[in-house]
Image (cartoon, rainbow, N blue to C red):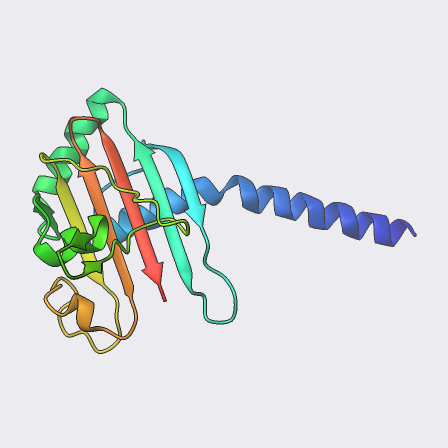
Length: 172
């Protein structure tokens, strides 16, 4: 009986240790993906629906920075060739906000399960895009984005006026 209780306590303690490190590891992982240091940011919102056999789902993270750090993040982004100044390309704008014509509508794709758009509409900012779709020869190119059979991409938006970074990763 003592062995069972000790094992249960050991499992609970291990889970507590690993869960307390998850936020730090998450900003470290995002920093590597986006090529900028996000360690001093505060995660405001964090949603992850990945799971199941294929690991399909989305990750949405909203990170806020104190005013003095906002300029540092902006400078890092400006000096990183993987980031672009807004506006989005037409395809990325459609993926993030959707597009309606008289005869059809497309997107948005960057949404919560309920279809809620996640990125605010800003004019002054920067974005990061990486298409992780198999067989894609240039992961920064979104020209064939809507001709894919599934979506596996990462997109981020940084608002330097509000010092907020929005991150979205989709795997279908």
